[in-house]
Length: 151
Image (cartoon, rainbow, N blue to C red):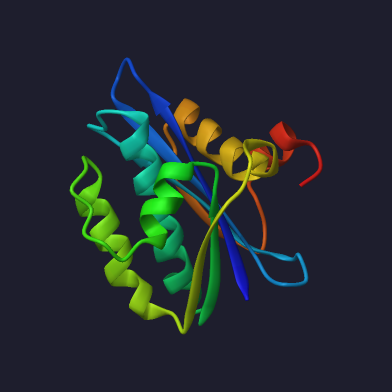
């Protein structure tokens, strides 16, 4: 089972966001970290939904069959767990997530408190601040290791 944590950082002034992602295997070994920046994002709710979609796409990129997607947005996690058509402002993003569910033998969406999502949060925050995207297998960029302290 692969675990992917996701979070988003949002800039209200410039309507930008960044998705922070970190993937672990069952033994707790880091498989990958990723940051993706987005423009023209209207609100933090949309930013979190995009981060959830990027988490799914990271699992696909890693070629895993079983995945747990964890995030600290109760609303996004709840909508991802549902199979109902979502008519909210993030409905199109949720539909994309639901379509990509078929890429996995097993998939679970799990809510976690912010305190347990510090790595993904730090990745998102640093990517937004630096306006940088990255993808790194088996590690985290120095900026993230310094910010978190023990990665």
